Image 1 (cartoon, rainbow, N blue to C red):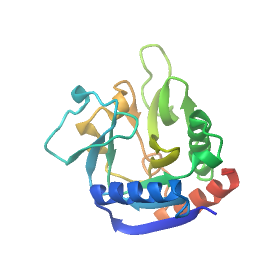
Image 2 (image 1 turned 180 degrees about the horizontal axis):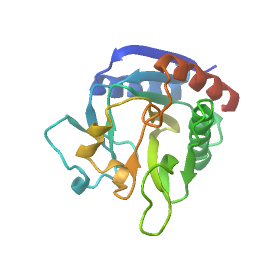
Image 3 (image 1 turned 90 degrees about the vertical axis):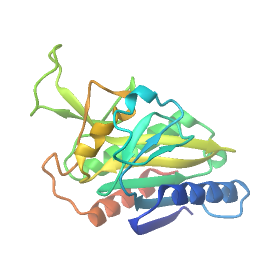
Image 4 (image 1 turned 135 degrees about the horizontal axis):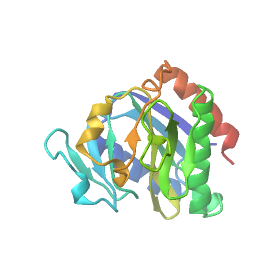
Length: 215
């Protein structure tokens, strides 16, 4: 049974990382349950293992945390649902690609409940939406914005870190970085797409879809 935890208020990033590392070690030792942890952070930037320092455009507005998760620079802040995923892949096939695909399908299925069509791209991480309401690129393709990010760390085949989905964050806060190194694409949120949803409603859909898809 996967435990489901939701923390109200804004959680300090270092406290969250410490909690995840401890819980992941306990899961690996069969001393605690797997866990999905829902929370929000105060405004901050994180730099993953592949972060390019040139992608940090503003070093002064928010704290910058160097983390060992996969990926590049990303933003966390109020109005963004962060879900930290602590699952034992020893029991789930030790297939990292399949695990990432599960996370993508989970996000897409949840967004679909709010009439948002999320898509994945073979050359980019995360979940994207096409923007017919914005100007086209020079090649004629519709612009795409990222609505959800994925960044993971595995230790003894137990995952931690996880996903973040933009419900209604201040999108201007993303301007201090090149999110995930993708300079040619923007960032959007459920609210910016014209859909009004509360965090509680989104969490219910997120939980329902997790248990539908998780094996």
